[in-house]
Amino acid sequence: MLRKTANAPLDQLNTLGFAAKASWLVKAEQPNELPEIFDFALSQQLPVFPLGGGSNVIFQGDLKALVLQQQAQALSWPEIEPDELILSVPASYSWQQLVLDTTNKGYFGLENLALIPGQAGAAPIQNIGAYGVELADSLQAVEGYWLPEKSQPAKFAIIDAKDCALGYRDSRFKQDWKGRFVITALQLQLSKQADPRLNYADLKARLAIKLDLATKKQQPEFLNQPLPRLIAEVVSELRRSKLPDPAKLANAGSFFKNPVITKQQAEELLTLFPKMPHYPATNGCKLAAAWLIEQCGFKGAKRGSVGVHEQQALVLVHNGGGTAQDLLALAEEITTAVKTRFNVQLEREPELVNL
Ligand SMILES: Cc1cc2nc3c(=O)[nH]c(=O)nc-3n(C[C@H](O)[C@H](O)[C@H](O)COP(=O)(O)OP(=O)(O)OC[C@H]3O[C@@H](n4cnc5c(N)ncnc54)[C@H](O)[C@@H]3O)c2cc1C
Image 1 (cartoon, rainbow, N blue to C red):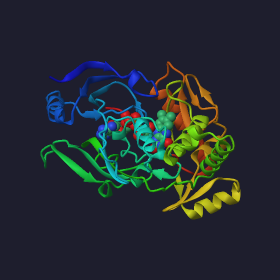
Image 2: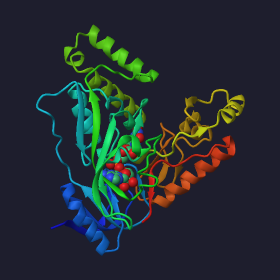
Image 3: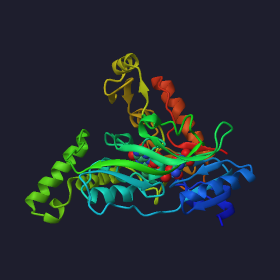
Image 4: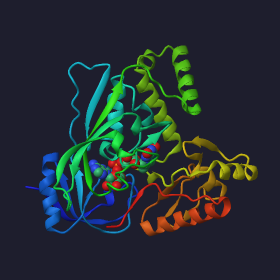
């Protein structure tokens, strides 16, 4: 018997807190319920929309869809933990809990990705990344369920990470596989071999200060923690100082991707704006969207019930009672201003859901 609710409110299921209803909300206890759920969606002539923590979606209105939520399952650890481990993680597992579990056991791999909201199953969709590390660095494979199509019947499958075209906030799950594959588990490669990735100056500096202080104050409870756990803690502190907590102020994290432009355009811009932050990228030069937005005067801007966060220009916030349309109008205003001033096109990061 499927656990399903008709006309289900989604207000509490998206971190932007926008009001929306789903034709059906269905909770799957186990992946083996997926065929029955898809048969039901087919019988209702509705698309299936997998929902994780709702931290990267903008609901534009009610969803004429079957919204699928996979229910929490436990992690299973091997009795003897090897130095090199391939860990299978259920899609419904909290990403932050996973970072805590793995780093507490001394495994490197996920420590720089601490405090990213959402569920593990959504992590490959935009190849989550932070502090110089991406999911792609650890992801071995993705387990899931192909929806039935004209050319092929529905089936469970394991997809090698190499075939997912994981890029900067991008993957095939957002492109040609969009709406075709439900992720049920991730296979992650983790290691106890020391491999701290401290290329971000503020992360490296803060870790060094904390280690130094703890040594001087002789705090064994701090110093005896595994290094990946310490790094995750410092990353969490840095994030808390910069990003609003969606539980207190509705938001979807970075609203825009950092734009990548050609080296030539970057050089031209640098002659006009010598202080413009810029970073090498494989296919050109990456700019800081937050800086561009700030230069256009939007930091802390308010438009009715929505606005730009006061400390972080990349984060758009919802103060309650507003709609996706209000937020999109502000995003459009910002995009136009940045284009006019810098001739740089900003691209939205969270997915606009309009089914
Ligand atoms: C405060 C804040 C900070 C953030 N910081 C970062 C950051 O540093 N780096 C970063 O990369 N992102 C960041 N994000 C964005 C977001 O947390 C990530 O994209 C996260 O992976 C989304 O997970 P979710 O479970 O909430 O996905 P949802 O928002 O529920 O879904 C996002 C997309 O994934 C699809 N999806 C979800 N689960 C599945 C599944 N099992 N199978 C198939 N498709 C699925 C959905 O259909 C939707 O298209 C931040 C967001 C917030 C609010």
